[in-house]
Length: 353
Ligand code: IPM
Ligand code: MN
Image 1 (spheres, rainbow, N blue to C red):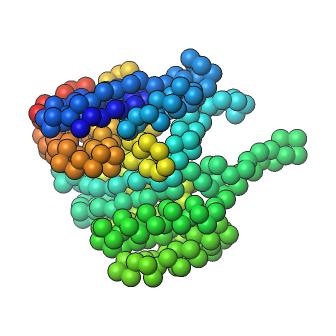
Image 2 (cartoon, protein in one colour; image 1 turned 90 degrees about the horizontal axis):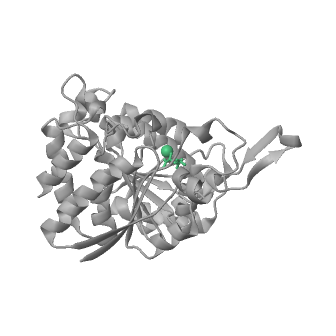
């Protein structure tokens, strides 16, 4: 197969971790006989520095003509404490999601046997946890009307969802639940929010189409608690954009490190694969960041964008082997030897071969 990949490393540790994902992709392609090409694109702070635009038209054109996007991270501290900044790196990520129509963000949460001790949660709670968070990605407060009034002293963000947006994400969630353990949890705040009541109404209407899927409804505050109280309760969890953002950071504690969680964003156009972690500017250029989330995002790329399941599995197997062998970065090393970002990447690539 010919794979044309748009490589968008972005900011901070993005370039370092994406480079390790590329090594894994190259190793898999060599092993399975695929022809792969990468084209570099700019997004985030590095794109602002070059063009003034966090998601330049040229990058969008590249994404549209590629088969998949491998994404690193965006963000730069120089924008974080400047509320007056007109352009921000994060707008690049929001623009790419919106313009590629990536309405669903799939964030699997799994545990590695040899890492269960690294989770801040009790081993017996997390061991064997395995669920899929489906976060709506192009609606809600992120994209609703926002602004200031009263001369700037009042601010608002609007959480808005249409039936069309809710139906398409719930349909996907029902389908994934059906392929998995047939248990879907719809997370909302229907006791307070009108948009949540629409989600719940539509989910109830859709239930009869998937009679073999058990559906439960959970308020987001309770879900935040249940995720750490009984993570093994969950199979597929679906929720709106902001709740999904928050709950998946929380869920990363179950695996032991933020540096382990990968994601796939899918929708109308080219799918995008990115670690759930941010640009971690404190570590940028130090060769210490955990590349596993980026490498597992590459595994998701083979599976979700190309339907190449064996290739994805080969990457997953090599990642698991690296963890079992203790070839891990400092976030997971705890006392034992910490490997650098590139050493972990090299080890995994050679294990794949
Ligand atoms: C994520 C990130 C982004 C988000 C930021 C960087 C805009 O936190 O992908 O979860 O909030 O969606
Ligand atoms: Mn986030």
